[in-house]
Image (tube, rainbow, N blue to C red; front, top):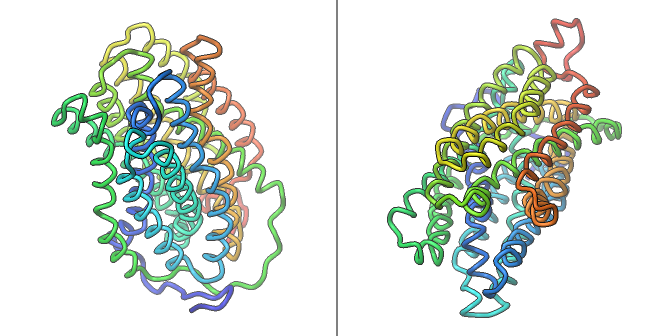
Length: 426
């Protein structure tokens, strides 16, 4: 075992297969989180007694949000271990724990079978998932940054965001297939179980791949705690990113419950959003290496601020599949565009000796407080205000606050810093 602050310096760059091993874990973990989100309507009927459909949905979304409560704990505990023991062992642990929770949730009986034990077990597995995913982000993002050539850090870190959208794409495709193969009754009863078990089936293979990764943690001298300003600005950026992302992930529920479209239409939009978000993430990461993190964050945020309201207005005005898909594609591209630059900026702002723990804490808090509550908040807002534009208003407000953070944050892209005649972070 490595001593605190010690590590192995990488001697060769990662192969494509090794990069895939790092981001595959992130994709699978987000796939599982998103299955729960996208099948929220069906899950509400499985885990809660029949009655008020809105109350059941809110209860299900509350369990979904509860998974975010343990994210900060996972971010702190596992992130600090990653800074002491290495990135690789902690990535193996978080991935294995997520696999256990995926399988457990998929096999949890319904409320009709075991009563209140059903939502209790679902809550337990969600808390475990939150702990694992909260602990995953710091080590894997730090690993990608440390494994990357300095001028390609944005591209490498964008793989983290791109795989999240790849997970969205996969959930959309799986959902479309299941709606075609299963009757509406069977789709609601166990379609989500099939989707989760499909994700769990790749866990053993991905664990083998991760075991073969080299370590990136190097020996570092003790460093002081980064200034509070770095943490606060990082939290602002992650909060804006999380709210917009999870409001976007609400689109399947929004399409069926608010727009009145069939489940297959919602999954078509989901798959479209996943594909467009993935393209946006890769573009944003590459451009942030060339033009700087701030330029990409600002341009993507402004575009999203200008487009969110018109897109939701169009969806509500026409309520057709083509308009739903087109609006989702536009929003998903720009929601995917700015997070890689934001995550790279926050990660580069922390010294390597404290990187995984600091990033894990900031990321987990931002996602837990703002991302985890986003779907519950917009559902509650629509019920209280009677306005179906609530998701658009909430997303726009988050982006506006994020723009303030972008103005205040410092540039960290190595190529841009050299162009400005400033020293690199490392």
